[in-house]
Length: 294
Image (cartoon, rainbow, N blue to C red):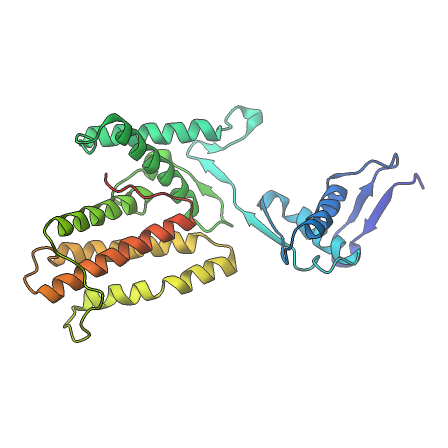
């Protein structure tokens, strides 16, 4: 009666949704309908994914129905990537209560913590100041990203800054340290004149651990495909962590550079190199850099 425009969604088990106020002004839903159409008009896309927290689940359920009713074929295919909320050990971050965390401050804190840990452990003793700062940046930001991305994105989680830079455990810094160790191994191999041949013999007698590592590497493409299909970077994060755990067990139990069998030594170097490359490409999909040394 007042000239406002509504959509009746009671048949879909929802409520009535306001689309235009009586004075003709729009609401969030109206704007999302318009921008959805504009995106499909302006860009050659076939699917649209909204990366928005789970507090907006109802909004995007309604948007999908409205777009479909308005005749837009992309309405039903709309994807709401509904991620969980991140909390601190002290509780949920709420701006009204003054516990909101600024992302820039958190990143600076993570970089500073990484630098302190490296200094205490003497890991940066042979680095100049610029390299030490760069490694601290890579490790600090990598630890932050990994700690959040290793969790199923749809679940709420608690982010603990101190736990995220633990060099022993399911952390980004643990993976980065293993990568740096392999890169150091490859530099030593090169200095010793050990080259990896273009082809390796197929009749090598491998241990169960080496065979398991090869099989684990073979899973990488399937894991990436599944992560894309389900919108879950956690699958990649946890795959890389499992690969690193298995490699560290292998590295502890078997010699690489000191292996006297030339062909077996070449295989183990090749295996190490491929594992390092897989770790780097997997982390690059998560936006995490790898340090050449730590």
